[in-house]
Amino acid sequence: MDSDIRNYIEKEGEIYVEDFMTEEDDSIVEPSQMGEEGIGIETILKKLVITRDKFILQRPGSINEDYVIERKIGKGANGDVYHAINKITNIERAIKKIPKSKISNIEYFLREVNTLKQLDHPNVIKLFEIYESANDVYLVQELCTGGELLDQILNENGLSENKAAIIFKQILQAILYCNSNKISHRDLKPENFMFASNKEGAVLKLIDFGVARSYYKKEVLAFNQVIRMKTRAGTTYFMAPEVILNNYTESCDMWSAGVILYIILSGVPPFGGETDQEVLENILRGEYDFDDEIWDEISEEAKDLIEKLLVAEEERLTPKQALEHSWIAGYSRLDSAVLLSHKHTERLRNFQKSKKLKKAVLTYLASRVSDEDIINEMKIFFKLDRNKDGYITLKELKEGMKSTPNIEEIADILKGVDIDKNGVINYTEFIAATLDQKGLMTSESLIKDAFQLFDKNNDGSIDQNELRSTLAGVEGELIDVEVWEDILKECDLDGDGKVSFDEFVHMMTNC
Image (cartoon, rainbow, N blue to C red):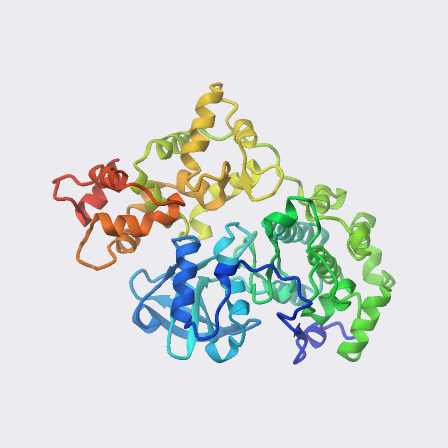
C-alpha cells in the first residue's frame, strides 16, 4: 500500500453529499431558517444575523472595501478559501468564497453559517463576518497558519504517541463540544483540522462545516429519542459503515476519529482500495489490522482505543469516554485541577462589576483576539472545564476559586460573567472576563473597530437606537426603552444622549 495517504484521500469526487434534503432525510431545520423560493440571499442573511450571535456581522458593501484578498490557500466542501488582510486592523483572516451558483439549496448554505455562529470553543474555527456580492457570499473566518494536520502526518511519517495523544485529545474535545451542542460534523479527516500557528504546541482547530448537521429538536430530545440521519455525507476513507448504509447518528464522527488516529500513528488509512467503491466495501467488512511493522512500536493502549472506535455504532465510545481512555490519560496527561491566580480572580470580579456596554465590548474584542494573545487564559479555561464540554459550570468555577470561601460571591461572579444567561460560562465569556484589558486598550485599531460595531451610521457617536439594535441580541429579548437609556447614561459624560468616541474610550479604560 502506498505510504503517501494523499493518494488515498485527495482523489476527485471523493466528498459525498447525496440527496441532501430528500424526504427520507431526517434533517431537523427550524422553519425560520428555511429558505423559501424567491427569497434573496440578503434577506436570509439578515434573518441569520438577527437570530444568531450578534457579533457575527453581515457587513454592508463590497468585501474589497474592507479586505485585501490575496492568495488562495484551500478548498472547502462548498467553496475556495483565501488569505486576506483587514485594511483597518491589519489582522489576517481566512475568507471562504461561496459562489451563489453552488447554493442550489438554501438550507445547505444556512447549515454551515448557522452552525459556525453557534460554536464557541478553542478547538473550533471562528466565524467573524459575512459579505455578499452579486455572485458570491463570503465568510470571514479565523486564519490558521500552522498548516493541516495531514501535512504534519506526512512530514513526520506518522507521529510519536505522545504527540499523537496531545493532538487526538484536541480532536476529541472538538467532537465532544459539537456533539454536546447537537451538531455532527460528518466530514472529519486530517485536512479538516488545522494548527492555529507554526509554534510548538499550537492549538488544533476543526474547520469546514460544509456538510455539518444540527440535529436538535426539543420535542424529540425531551423523550430521549435518538435522531438518525439518512444522508450519505463525508469523505470515502473516513465514512462510518452506518453512513454508507444511510442510517446513522452523531456517533459517525467517532468512527472518523478512529480512522484519523490510525492514520496519525501509522501514516496509512485502515481501509484501502483501488476505487472508492472498493474502499466502501472494505469499510463495511470492517476488517483492518495492525500487521505492519510500524505497529510493533505502538502501545497496546493506543490499539485498544482504535479498536473501541472502529466498531459497530452501539459499541463505539462516546467522545467523553474516549477522553477518559487510559491512552489519553497516560500520554497527554489529563489537565490537573487549577486554582485561579489572584490576578485572574480580580479580573473576574472587575468584569462582574463592569457596565453592561463595557461587558459587550469586551466580549466582542475577546471574540477577535488571536490565540497567541490569550494563550494563558485559554489554558486556564481548559483546566477549569473538567468535563471537557466547553463550558465552566458553577461547580467547576468553585473548584478553581477555592481561595474564595464565599460561595455566594462565586455564584454572583458566574452570573455576572454569564452574559448570555445560559447558566454557565462559555469560552468567549471567560476570555472577555480574564483578558488583559490594559494591554488590549493599547491597540487603537481594535478600539476603533469595536466603536464602529455600535456606530452603525458612522457619525462618530452611539445613540440609543444603535445601542438597542446592537445589544438586543446579547440580552436575548426586547428590553424597555428605560433600560437602554440607563445603559447609555452610564457612559454619556456630557449628557447629550449619545456616547462619543472619547467617552467610549473613557468607559473602556476607567469604568
